[in-house]
Image (tube, rainbow, N blue to C red; front, side, top):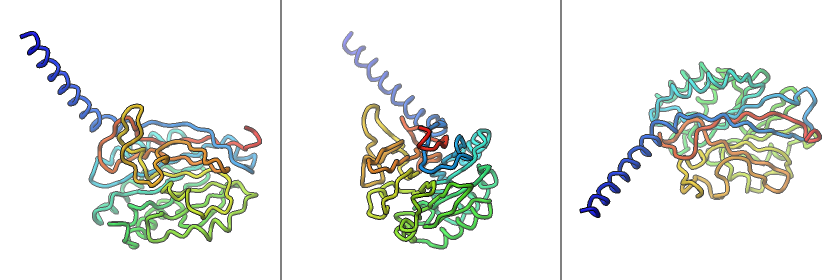
Length: 283
């Protein structure tokens, strides 16, 4: 009888733990936003930009898969940090229909803006179903521009001495990074935005030395403690989340995403990253 009672209690405990873990992963962690603060030393950064704040937001995934008022509320929290630069590194929607374009338009009324510049690139989901709909990407680009956000699609633009290079998405229809990377001036203070970190392993960089800000992976969204995330949408499984020294003068940072492809997270909280700019000579 004692053994039977022990087994019953053990099973009940396991079921209770599983239920609580499920509720936590579904209703709590997906909305438990973390503001991650990092230093960003940049070669040739002008003195007027030392100490300025650059905020990265990534993978909003506006759509019907979770309540996107969470994104609007997160924007309001982020605005209080008064960033000088804001960069969005792709996947603004989880596209199922034109409804998502209206939803994005609503969310962009509350977009976080930088005091100096607000810049974006596109992700694979911004190219519609199966990443094949150029019209969806063009409409999202237009909505972003109307909201005061500069969209870089294999182009670069300088803002108060910081030159931002934006690559279009690796899986999209407009991926063509070589020409713009051939044009990059190593004497400038440069920063590259690139949605999919797998691009770091391609032969397109033309001896670029500096930071690359990416998203795409969501950190796997579910990560067992002390183990790697089991599901990552990249070939290079080293590219999960956070800061990675590529050992060739490039530093990759992968944001864990603000939104979710599906409303479940475990041990991978949603993230907004705030970088403090500094010149490498001051490090």
